[in-house]
Length: 112
Figure: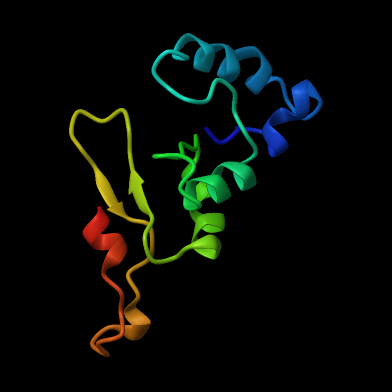
């Protein structure tokens, strides 16, 4: 779980949402998930790409999407939660600049 605030709030120094809401909620699910506190987005995304987690959750798409594209632009998938239907998409743009050239990678699309 990526923190909402920079550096996951630094224990309340940079915002109290992690301390007051996010981490207590994660603790409720401690029997079902391996993490019981939020992490900085940098740590969570890097660990996810390294295979330490099955999934990395971010509250805001831009909190994960932009840095994740720097770390790994070929495999990530965006999953939108809270909808009445399943919604996944490749975590990259439309790549109009390389359309028709036969050089686009389909990995993120296939994963979605």
